[in-house]
Image 1 (cartoon, rainbow, N blue to C red):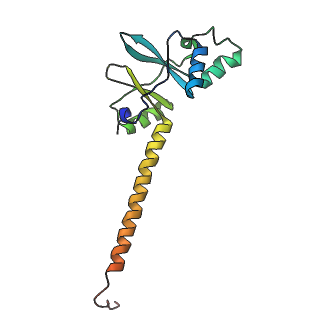
Image 2: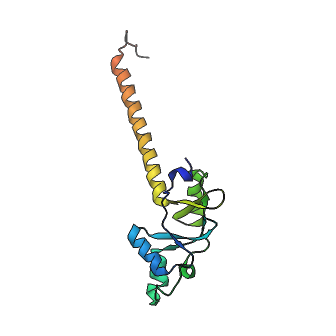
Image 3: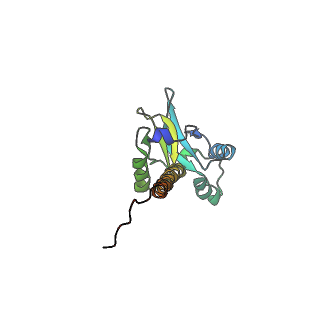
Length: 160
């Protein structure tokens, strides 16, 4: 499975230059904890940053700043890590660990925003895979038990 298959394709984003207030409104309206900040050129939305609800709390509210007077560009995390939609999810998990991030914008080969992949998405996927493996184990044990009850030895095996 790759990032493009697992990611959420509906991404809440703000344009560079939008106010922090606008980003907070988007988070509230769509019940998300982050927005991807994009620049839009020739119809291509390229991720250039990310703003989380924590960023707004720590950088704006805690300093009693007016979110209507600040642009998302002023508080966004600029060194975001993106992954191409063809990247295997195992590699995405490694990237998250290396960079210490829980959310990664997913881009196509041209760098256009295609989705977002979160730590929670990976946990859900891996949980389903573990349930499948657990069901396999149970099924194998049931089959083995059925085979043992269906067969009976023709003669007793003498002790050694």
